[in-house]
Length: 155
Length: 155
DNA sequence: GATTCGGTGGACAATATGCTCAATCTTCGC
DNA sequence: GCGAAGATTGAGCATATTGTCCACCGAATC
Image (cartoon, rainbow over all chains, first blue to last red; front, side, top):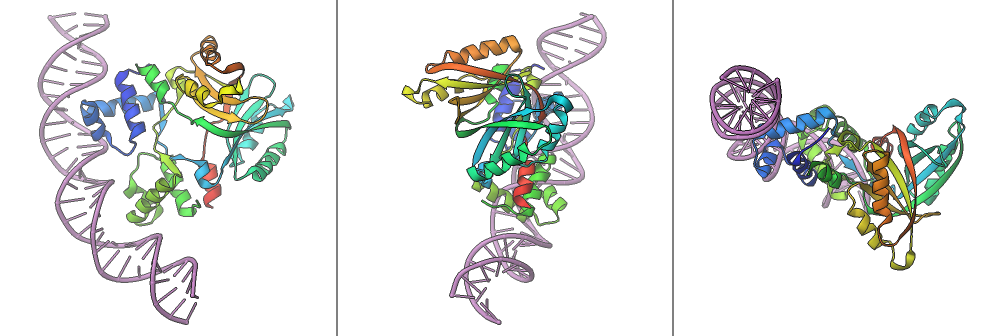
């Protein structure tokens, strides 16, 4: 769907100060409360806003190590059962199927490099996984964000 | 920091129904309102909870294509200026410096495969970027999540 | 010219919030 | 064991917010 400038400002405002309510938003944006409510309802209905956190920092929980693991899988059974098994591992934060040399890419976290080995072993043990390649994220100069995208989409 | 079972349940509850307030949480968890407030304040202070969305789905905004781009950079100037330039591109959702063959890994979105070419061109144009390799995410069987990790950390 | 849609501004009861307090319960060091 | 510190509880209070109505307006559409 398309969003306009007001939508973008609303999202940006909520992202910056998530604890403020609908009424406060309407004051900050100089629009009526009903307008803010209608916009939020619309974006939620259209799937643009999928939820409202809470956003968890794995590092603060002790999971300091982030890695991206490329999986090569045996193609016979398809990737669905593999993904289902990966989903059972808490340290696997997301899984994609990909083009290129590998078959799947997943983001994992671990408490240490040694712990990462344990997590990778769990992944390798999944039925259908033939081989893995890992790269460790040393630093994250740009953490995950969508605000610039929202601004770009909404003017 | 360490979190306990109550913290984990609280986060899970908020993740499941983000629009409920502190009072409602306390009722659902059978604890006092002050306790819920104290737990949330503590987790926010410790950095475990970094914010409260709103969570945006790029696909719903028309950015259907997700890709992971590995960057090879000229090492002379370091990676900071490169990251700064990448941060200026709205379609670049996150950037990591990594071990292994490449130097940086970034997640980008685009409106189509053709649009992805435009985004990659923007990245290649960044001063210090020598070469890129892209893999396109075809499907996302496990979308980004932290709840299983929270449960694992909190019992 | 009529209709529809999004926005406005106001009202209402019901509810939630921020804040404080004293009392109890746990946990930990000693 | 025992005291102290910290966490939790339940309560109260004034204020703010929410959900839900409604009538009205302006712009765009047909």
